[in-house]
Image (cartoon, rainbow, N blue to C red):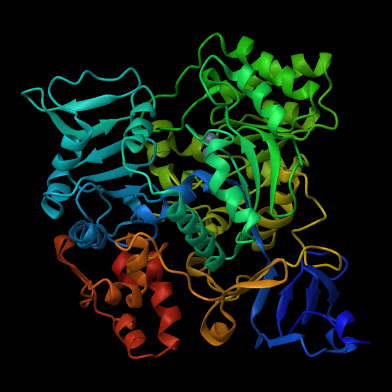
Length: 625
Ligand SMILES: [Zn+2]
Ligand SMILES: [Zn+2]
């Protein structure tokens, strides 16, 4: 065998979950030209001078995770501007981060926390108050988005937005007022989240070069958590092709480290059909390559079909023009064999959409056109059967992990038991993909989502589902890999570690299959490989890590705090100058007695790292109330 036919990469001495039925477990993998070429037969390959061989030291390896519903193309443009409360264990930590960031944010810029958290994840189990937000940032504008329920503005942000006593409520939202009619700073998504979208839109954007840097950091953050693929669901005010210029440039430069298939969101109210016709001239399903490709239309097809999940508020009744609007657009898509996805939370909306789909299908058969619903928290058995009959799929996300408590309050535990009914979907043989819907409601962390599927609990630890609607770890992983690959029409190409498939895989900090259930939430990757190349490496594999890239702008919260679980990483906290005392929750009269593993980490004791990670969520007494 000569050097050119030698493999590029050999991974050996691992516990590999292949998700390939023919060979479910293996100890080695061989990679060449971005594909898996050998499974469990590494010794049969002759190594060339350029063959990289890595001993995985008994670590668990899984196929790269694939989020079938995320808003990364939009989210990447502003990732570096956002302070993330994702995974922050207490409100006190969150406010401390806010204060630190406000002090380093230059005039004219904002501090923004754009979703990805729930107050139930906090030790205090409550929202911040407006007084608290004003106290930590008297001068710098602050916007804190809480799900698609409300937004909190400090006084400086109210001034920057120009919201005063004289500002009327917009049609799509409520500006809360005090007794004198002055805005308090609280924005309420009533009747819908329009005012929250609009307020995000008032905040400064990054220049293009920094948007590129920001998107790269977001991809790296996802790689750190084991994600190698996703399907992008467009987003409100995400215009094709203008708002795709950054990701297309990164694609051209070969700087993408997560594969993306993108769906095109409806562009303008009342012009939905015209806009899709325009987009159809510019791109088409499958156009692109394995890193970046068009996946059709959605998740919003027409504005009249948007049923936001905002469980503190009653279910919205969609307008009567939904059927007419949707039929026009779906007929156009079906006639052009454009795959489509559609956002739908409630069965009351889903059953009306299905009426339209069945109607169109009689005239223009869907056969051969990949289509699916997103979310489906309250879909009925009858609707599931109709989805099955029409050959559709369902992409589910852990939105309930962030707002299940609100759903329980309004609808009760019986109704919550199957939100969504994952087990029933699988029993019916409907294709199911897993994901998060990040970044504005749920966090992008796939391990929270896998935990939610397996344990049936929210990030606040509230049990939502009976055993029957919870999945085994293998089933959950299957949905997050093979399952999701169906949603971009790439079944068989990725999702399993088998000869011929794309070489996308992850080596884990902890063994997903055997670690205590609560620890699933804190799993990360120690080595992530996309297209046969190492895109993330840490711990014992740190010497393989790709070169670091700077974080722009200089004052970016990402530079000091990074992404998910920032205060859990004392290195980040130390860099940010955040003091890390013995963890205490005085407000709750609760003191934390255990040795703070973070201090040991600072002293370089690696073993403490996993203990510290386990501290998040439940591992520690701290969260026992
Ligand atoms: Zn949606
Ligand atoms: Zn979405």
